[in-house]
Length: 164
Image (tube, rainbow, N blue to C red):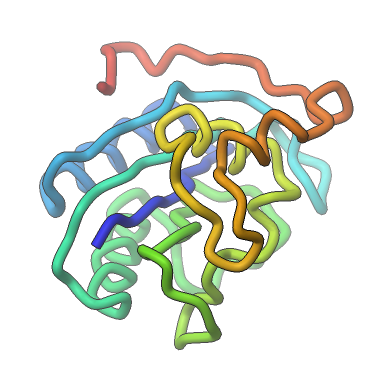
């Protein structure tokens, strides 16, 4: 199964993202990683977030993938009860899990807001432009081409050592 995940942090974001990347690479095979991008916090006033997308292949169930991602978030210093609209050390969200569609414990797939969020859609289009959105019937790259990027500016950020 091909899985795509959004990763973001606005508390020690470079350190947190590098730690999360290492955790994902340790757990999954053939990991691909987009560039990292800074963008303003949404839903609250706070430091900019730094976000990127990761893709990997796994034979784990959705619940198994979520368990690994939650453990990586915890390793980065995130608590499961942290407020939703607040600064955070790590947020790992499954955007696509193959062509799975529906509401599941811990995830709605495809993630409903990723086509409306530049910080999710842009990095995903970078690593998986030909991935199909299972309910819209459009390729991720085409969705990004149609996206109003001027209204949702992303600024490329270096993570230090090349994460690719």
